[in-house]
Length: 107
Image (cartoon, rainbow, N blue to C red):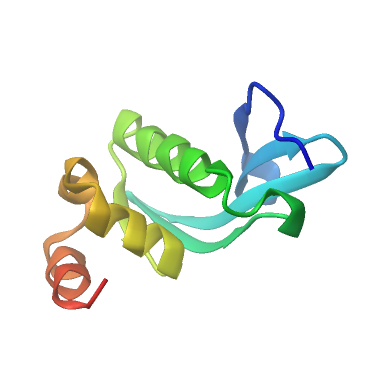
């Protein structure tokens, strides 16, 4: 399937997830808010859109939201964790204990 030229990511706070509408399909990252922390649980991209950068756009939007709202990030989702390992500009969002754990894990 063809990826829309513009992939807009929105925060559906009621459903606790960031979403990108892709025609009739939806890509998403689920999360939980705990005080000053946002815990990213799961990233899901419809099979027709895998490998096209959609998940990266979702993660970037979610991490930018965390930064703008002074939230510490706990990446339980393996995709979010991998993204942060590969993009050091987001590692400052991690609490120290999470940073040490994440950076100790293999890519």
